[in-house]
Image (cartoon, rainbow, N blue to C red):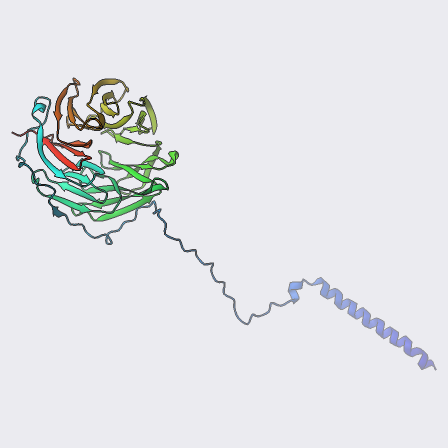
Amino acid sequence: MRLHNELPSRLYRLSFGLTLVCLGISQVFCRLSPRSFLSTPTPTSTATLSPSPTPTLTATLLPTFTPTFTPTPTPTLTPTALLLVEAKTPIPPLLPLIDTTNTAFVSGITEYQTPPLVDFKWHPTRFLLAAATTNSIYLIDPSQPQVSSIFSLDEGISTFDFSPDGRWLVTGHRYGESLESFFGNVQVWIAPNYPRVAYFGDYRAVRQVQYLTDGKTVAIAYSNIVDAENAIQFRNALTWEILSTIRTGILVTTAISPDGKTLITIPDRYSIKVWDLEKGEVVYSLPTSFSGAANCLAISPDGTFFATGHYDGSLILWDIEKGERLKTMQASGVVESLALNPNGQLIASGSSFQSTLIQIWSVSSGEELRKLEGHRRGVNFLQFSANGQLLASASYDGTIRLWGIRP
């Protein structure tokens, strides 16, 4: 009976003891950090993270701004003889210099038939006339008037210039349509066979390129339908890095003084602006009227004055430092082109609309010294040769004419 009565009591004590033991063990485990007893499972295979796919860039019409040097892909361009048009008479080996004393004797020397031209200038170190179409440049040797050389370059040429030492040729290009905006690029070629050695593009069309006379800098005028994007960019002629940029607004034409310190722009035909390139700012502006809108300009070889040609036929000489009007001459029609001879004593003007004449004027007196007839349409390019012996002209009639004095 006693055993029967003590059994529940013993079971109760045993159960109570086990409960205390369990509580103690629980307290120990609760004080441990979960990471101390949750072992890291050993993976059966190591997961490798795949890199995010790199997006493929789709080629667009906007090439990189950094010049790409291409020493091999562009084939060497070999000049090919091309008969333009037979010279009416041979050119004498030596011609007198054209000056104020003999301008009355200037006459036509020879004529060439050409496709429409986009730019036109004399070679800086050789007695060659360079005339550009949209995809080629003709090199005309006046001493061999029946034959010229032609370099076939990339399409879209709008402008070009040679370095002062004649080693480099830079071409500016324009593509697109006016309704959708233009875009362009600049390409660099090296003499004598002119393979392309550099290329860089832009979302704007290239209107004009000009080497500064020191040969170290190239000025590139860009045009765009957005007014604020019109600018002149100055690049190092060796590395092609951008040195500075001047935002000019819409440009008709530009010219840089021989000392590289002054920039003259015709931004919108109704004004003329003179810039200080060291400061990058406008020194003064010369407003023009609607009927007398400015159309072309030329800077004197010594950089002391510049000339502007206007729609009303006026030809105006300006003091470059003060902006004062020095002289005004009246041409026979809209002044489409201008050229100063090497010593700055003569200025030639080419007309269009109501006249197709070339007129040669004395800078000092403003007197008209000679009228040259021959072109059947407006004269859009004029250039005196560096030796002062010839005046070259190009016309919308598709001809180039050389003018000089026969001995």
